[in-house]
Image 1 (cartoon, helix red, strand yellow):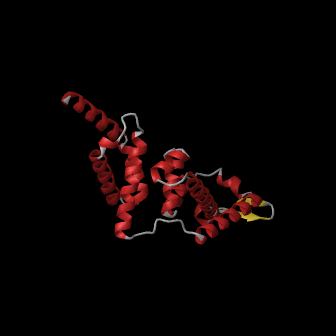
Image 2: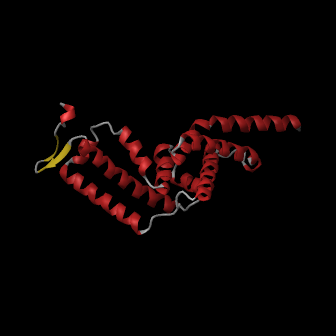
Amino acid sequence: MNADHAEASRTFEERALACLPHIERFARSLARDASAAEDLVQDTYLLAFRGRGTFATDGDMRRWLFSICHHAWLRTVQREQRVVLTDDGDEAELETLAAVMGHVTAQRSGLDRFVGSIDVGPAIAAAIDRLSPPMRVVVVLVDVQGFGYDEAATVLDVPVGTIRSRLFRARRVLQERLFEFARDAGFTVSATGADRHPRASDS
């Protein structure tokens, strides 16, 4: 019996530690501070090893650890009263409306085609970092980590409809910020569509 328990423990530890890179990236996206992210990872694994008896042997280890990490972060944030982790109500709707209108304008001007032709990797990372916490965590789970809507809903303990709503708003806001990036890169709108005009620093 002791040998069987030791074998099960090793299997659990190996599976949990194999997820460490994913948890580290997720923690950094939540905490946005290297030291706080490191503490969050440690808390996650401490809670996981303490509660390993609740983990089903055929369960999804990565999703389980993501859920623990998210709840640990929520407790930290609520304790320190840094942010309010709820939807932004009317303000969020207005932000989404502005982003949608910006998308329409960009399509009409041709700016959206230029966004697809330039390197937007750094801009995407910066734009995700600027999202409100509820939207940022959904984008990280679904668009960065590759979780399905149902899986993300399980991790965050919210309805699937909430995941869809937040992701829709977040993607529109990200899109608008990428259009801003394109304009800052020198793309301007004229009567004939979007075009690039080199800035002084480009010449």
